[in-house]
Amino acid sequence: MEKVASECPARRVTKLRATALRRAFGACVDRLAEKMADMTEKIQNYRTAPFDARFPNTNQTRNCYQNYLDYHRCNKALAAKGLDVSPCDWYQRVFKSLCPVGWVEKWNDQVENGTFAGRV
Amino acid sequence: MFKLIFQQTKKHPTLIPQFFFMVLGMGGATFYLMRLARGPHISWDRKNNPEPWNRLSPTYQYKLVAVNTDYKSLKKEGPDF
Image 1 (cartoon, each protein chain N blue to C red):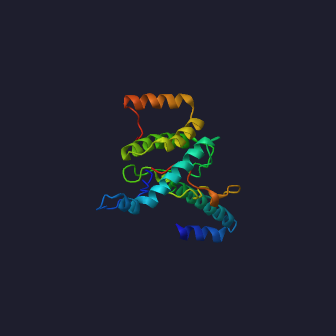
Image 2: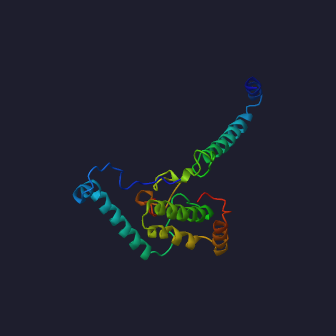
Image 3: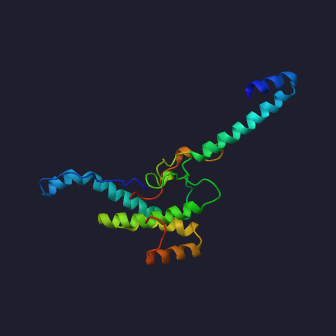
C-alpha cells in the first residue's frame, strides 16, 4: 500500500483568523498547489507509460494491474480528503496505455458490481 | 558422508573436478533461488506486507545486472495519495 503522503501536517490551530491559518498551513498549501500544477502539466504532456523500476522485465502485467489499483485508490483517498481528484488521471493514462482493453472493461464491470478481487 | 567422499577422492583423484563443479552448480542455483524468494516482487505475507514492491524507492535496482538503465535519475511518477 502506498504510504499516504501527508502533505500538510495536521496542526492544532487555536485561532481561526486568516493570518493564523496562513501561518500554520500557508507553506504546505503552496507546495501542494505547485505539485498539482506540475501534475496537470505532466498529464498534458503525456506520451506513453514511462519506465517503472518496479517492473523492469518484459512481463508488464503487474504494472498494468498496479496502476489500475492505484487509480482507484487515489480517487478514493483524495475524495475522502475532499481534494481534487484530477491528479489521479496520471494513473488512468498509464494503465490505459498498458492494459488490454478487454481487461479494463472486465475490471470496470467487476468494480461496478462489487466483485473486483483487488483491494480498491 | 564427508569421510566417504574424502576416501573415494584419495583413491580416484579425478573425482575432484566432479565435486567442485557439482558444488558450484548446486550452490549457484540455490543462491539464485533464495535471491528470487527474498525479492520484493513476491508477496509472502498478504496481511502485513501485501505489496512489498511499493515500499521501495523508485531508484531501487531489481535486476542483478543492469547495463543500460540509469537508476539514479528515476523518480516517482504518479501523484502521492
